[in-house]
Amino acid sequence: MNSEMLGLSYLQIALGKTDHLVAHINSNDKEPSWDGDVEVYRKAGHVHAKADLILKVPVQVKGHCKPNLKKKSIKYSIQYADLKNYLATGGTIFFVIYINDSGDKAAIYYADLLPYDLKKHLKAYDGDPYKYKSIELKAFPKKKNDIADVFLNFTHHMNMQRASINSTPVTLESLYTSDPAQFSNIELTMGYSTTSRNYQFPFDYFFDHETYLYVKQPHNVTLPIAHLKNVETVNYTVNAPISVKSVVFYDHYTVSRTKNLSTINFGADIHQALQVGTQAKPDFHFSLSGSLSERIRDARFIIAVLNAQQYEINGGVLNFSGASSNSSGFIDVSSIQKQLDFLVGMQDTLNLLHVKKDLDPSLINEAGQNCLNILKIALLDKKSVKLVPSDSIFRPCHVANLNLLLCTLPIEGTDNFYDVYDFNQAPITFTTEDSSGNENPSSYYVQLNRNLMVWCDNIDYDIMLDTLKGIPFSEEYSQSLNTLILEMLHAYDCSNSTREDILSAVIELTDWVRKNDTFSLPSVTTINHYQAIKRSRKLTVSEQADLYQLTESPQEDEQIYVGAYLLLDSPVAATVHFSKLSLEEQSTFLGFPISHFMPNNH
Image (cartoon, rainbow, N blue to C red; front, top):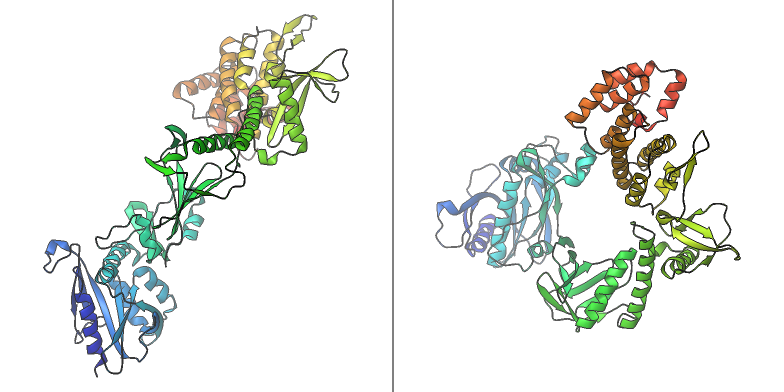
């Protein structure tokens, strides 16, 4: 029995079932590593137009007599020389047909030998043409559409991997190592080609089929970086509203999809699981977690859902009445309402303190809860509270992830009772005394230092600016403002450039001081304003012209030249003028925030 001829016959019969393939396979083919090819067409039919031809797929066929035809996969040894030829041509489908002793039954196995895998197989190749590599082959499908899919998918990946034939292999690790800063911006793709079957969800194909992961390189070159045997879970984000009776609560949600389960996730900890392809009741889970604002929003949503017994998502409606819930006490609307009222009370209290940072309730300890209770009584209920005596009217308060600054005024004739105020609305008058003993109006904001500004979460810089701008200038007030400006710049730098609220405020403050302060040197106010701007963006031509004017005008203080040249990105000129300063002046200059722009060797 000629197993090669018989094997070819069984393969020809299998391929002949399909409407997309035309096989040209011959046991007498004289090509060194192939037995022919299979034409793959886009459109199904018995007669195919030339324009519909996608690709000719090279094939190699081996036939063997074997009594066991029930294996799901087999191992077969292929010469390295053949693998090298397969790589050079862009890939080959390798077939092994097992035939029983009587020749009336056969089992077909195949391997998609594409450049990505061939390169891995050839790593151990030392040039010896007589050496072999053991390759795993899987069972060939029996249904005609599945058979067509093998070739359609192979042509898709064969085309995608042509650029990788002669390129250096690329991995996710190598991409990260070459440019860590751009790693999050890389574009990864997956794809497939199949017959006209419709998948309810495009990724459903990957749950049962192998595929490759590709990275897009410069000049639109696409290279394979991974061979995925199958995909277990797909996560994706949908930018679409979730609402109850047209009231939108969320503007997006994520979906975690497996072969049999689709889970919708939104809010801090809300998810609804739906069994794919079944009528099983959806499983709804809810718990209050996340930040304070997230808990308030989620609680309001759940109460609305319980009342409406449904919610709308991306134009559809999910009926809640049929859902099962695994959240303890979830059905008790009154319990959720009590929790919501408590959370809203906390939020209202923090709003009165002008806190913009979101509270993390999971970090609240007993001391923090006591502090919140005291603040609620003092600010919301407007009652005096008993506090530990303090020498300062301003005192810090720490609650979970928040650092607060309070104004506490003792009530005369009481046993340590105080009225508590938001720091930004302290009912006090602040003045400074000049050299003649005259008092000049000022603001307690000028006492803020860099550490306090970085630490504190309830300084309202809009209120601060309005307050500072409402005080008439004096020589003492001018000095205080310039000191505050330097501290604000230091604070922004100390925050690793994260406190945009401080930077925005100091840009506005220096602009106002530059235009209105007649007690400060214009060169100083110009340097301060532009060094604040330079931390935010590049200086305009007009702004640079102002600085060049400083460098071309006589200055009593050499430090002005240093600062101007630093802001003009002229480190050599800045260094020359810096060297003209005394050691004491150099040390003083390096303590100013302008030194942020000094060359690294200083």
